[in-house]
Image: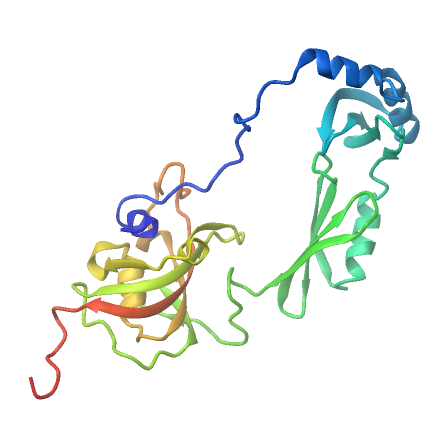
Length: 292
C-alpha cells in the first residue's frame, strides 16, 4: 500500500521538514582556531565592513564554512527590517541586499507587468530573496528574485486552481459540493462502484499551491479500493474512465472534515488533486465480458 493510500484511508504522510545534519563530525576546535587566525579579515573587521555597507544594529553574527571558504554572516536590523550581510573572510568582499521592496517590484515587472498583490522578503535566505505575486492575464504569477542583484531565480504562473492549468474550462459542480475539471478525457473502462480497485497517479495541493503528497514525485502509482478512501475520491475518481486525467476540488466535508489530520492536513482544508486513472486492477461489480 502506497503512502497516498495510507493518506486517504488513515492519515497523510506529513510534508518533510528541514532538519539539522547530524551526520557530520563536530568541528575540530584547534583546526578552526588556526583557520580563523589565518583569515585576512577578522571578526571585528567583518562587523565594521558589514555595518559600513548596511547601516544599522548588528543583532547576530556567525562564521560559516561554505565549500571550504570561511565567511562571516552578519544580521543587521534597522528601519523596521533586517538584512543578511556576508563578508568573505579571505577577500573581505561584502555581499549585501541592494534591492528594496520597490526595486523588487520593478525587477519583477521586467518579467510580468501585472497587478501586484503581495511582496514577501526572506532576508535570511542564501541569497536573500523577494517573492512578488501578481495577477496577469487570468493567472497568478509568482516571481522570486535575488535581493542582492535583482536576478530572477524562479517564475511560475498558476490558474485559479493549484497544479495543472485548466485553461478556460469551467469546473463541473456536483450536488455533493465536489468540483472537477477533466484535463484529459479517458476512453477506457469506468469503475463500476466502491468495490473496484484502481491504479492512479496523483499530486495533492493545498489552496496556496503547496504539494502535500504526490505519487508522481515518488515514481510509484497508488492502488486502492474506491470504497476505502475519502468521499471526494470515491465520487471523483469513480466517474472517470481509464486514460483520463482530472482535477478534483474537494471541500473539507468530503475530505478530512473540520478537524483535518493533525500534522498533515489543516482543519477545514479544501484539497486539490490532479489524478490520472491508469487502470482498474480489479472490479468485482463489473458486468462480465460479452461471451462469458
